[in-house]
Structures are given as structure tokens and as C-alpha cells.
Image (cartoon, rainbow, N blue to C red; front, side, top):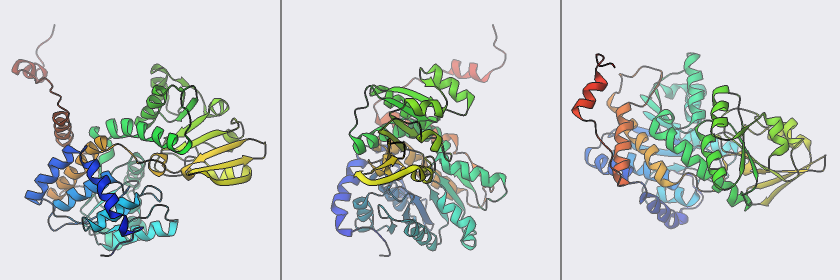
Length: 419
């Protein structure tokens, strides 16, 4: 099989991880069983640029069960679980191009391999695959009937492309679905980010000052988990509404330059560029730790930090680089400024990815069913998909909720009932 993974002999260990994750993904499992019966994706070629993890493997199994001819590649050079990649190839027969630690050239060679598959549907985590189709591989873009985007960063890129009139095929903003951003971004990113920081550093979070840059759903999750571990949390923001929300949630809000003087640990989750810059590094405490949980490694100005350093000590611990500054202080950067939760840990828990990937699978089916009828723009996930996934998740959690009575439903639909 055409593939590029670390070592196919790792497949048995990867299979164990995939099966363990599957135990916590009952919603996706139910969809997979229906897909296996109905084959809603039969005849479609798919290329997916995603984090190659055990949870992603179960999504790939679901798409494969639905009849899709699928190829996978990595959406981040450090997020691949090599044993899982091997198992996807060897145990499930799905061509995969992903190696943890791959360099820039190999990363884009793997994306090229996914495009060489001549897909009809693409799935992205950061929009790198879609961008290649719009820039260097435009001839293949004409084959695409639709695409799904999983991340906030990717949706930002795609909406910018739409505004500029650059978009060549319909894209669904899966990230914006309630079952994705309310749970995956908040609870998944919050827990997995702190997990990655702790695994990389073995730091005691209790009593530390943790600075969270950005108070979107991901930032809210990181702030909540850090506070839960005993940290004093500082939030930095550029959006006044989010800043007020952070303040009313009980966090101290201040500019990054002030926070830089106080923080012990910094986590960026903004989706923007150069959030922490030389003027911030210059005033940080000796031993300050800086990490990123946004999709791209641009939130921390690493070139600027390197220019300030008299010495860079790589790998003082796994996924920790120490920058010894000319002022005598040291700043430690985790996971090369890439996604710390996937580079230094295992990414989001399977139970929360169950919802995100269920939405992905059902949205793929929706795109296939509406082939040729979708406008070339960024679409929202249909609300009925969100409702179905949420209802099924509640059921698998053993949670029951009320239903509207006829009287209540009529009241909500009426306009003539007042005081």
C-alpha cells in the first residue's frame, strides 16, 4: 500500500490505543454501524488532513465503513501518534502519510500525496490541504464537491478566502457547530493543554500564575482547568466583550506586557500571530514557561526570541527548549511552539472527540447527499445534525431530559399570549 509512516511494526500497539478510544466514542460507533449498512459515501474519494490520533482513526474507520475511498495525512508535524498511523494502514487498510516530527518538506509532500488521490471531498484541520488546492494544485480543485474544516484557525482562513472571492468549492465550518466548539474547544482543549504542559514539565500548577492569551472557547477551557488545578489565572484579550466576560468569570484581565512580568506559565490560544513578542520575553521571570495551543506555531514569536538568546538549549526535557537570554534569564518553550496538547500529550479525550467526529461524519454524508447543490461559500453545519449528536450523546451518558408539552410548544410558537 502507498503510505509513509514511521514503522508498520508499531501497528499492534496502535490498534490497542484505537480500540481503547473507541470504547469512549459510542456516538461515532453508532454512526459507523449505520454507515456500514447504508454505504452513503460509496464511490466518493476522500482526502483528510487531520491530527493522526486514535480518535481520528475511529473517524477514518467510520468514513471507510460508509464506502469512502479514503487517504489520510497529518495536519501538524508533531501531532501524529506513530503507532496509530501504522495501525490505520496495517489493520484497516487506509493509506496514511504521517510521521511524528516530520520536517516542513515532508509535511507538504504528505499533503501532496493526499491531493494526488484526486479527492471529491476533503476534510481539514487548519485548512492547509484546502489552501494547497487553491494555490499550487488548482487543477484538482474542480473535482471537489465539498470540504469540512475542524478548527477555529482554519475557519478564519476560509472566511477570509470567501471574502476575497478566492473560494473554489463549498466548505462546511464544522468547528462552529455547537457540538464541536462548545465541548471540544472548551473542555477538550482545556484538559489536554494542561495535560501537555504537565507531561512536558512536571510542574506543580497549584500556586502558579498562569497567563491565558485569548478568551474564546479554547481560552475559557484552559483558564478553567488551570484554575481548577490551583493556579491564579490572568487573561489577556483584544476583544472588549471577551475581556468583560473573563473579568466577570473571576479572572484578572490585563495587557500582555503587564501579564508578562507576573506569569509563571503562558498559554496562547488566539489563532493570531506574534501574540507573545520580544518586548514580553524581555520582562519575563527567570524560568518562565511558554506554550501554545493554537493550531499554528505563529502565536509565539520564536524567531524574535532566538535573536534575544545568547544560547538555545534544545531538549532539556522532551519537548522543552531553554532560551538563555542576554539579560541572564531563561525562557522555556514547549513543543517548539506547536500544539502542546498533541505534541507533548495525546490530544483531546476520546469522549469529547466522539461528538466532534460524529458531526464530521454526518456532515460528510450531508455534503455527499447535496452534491452539486451547495453554493461556493462557507456553510454552517445543519442544526439537525447538532441536535441529533447531542441527543445521542446524552443517551449514551445515561442522561434523560424533559420534552415540551403540547401547551409549551404552542406557547413558544405563538405571538398572541402576553401578560
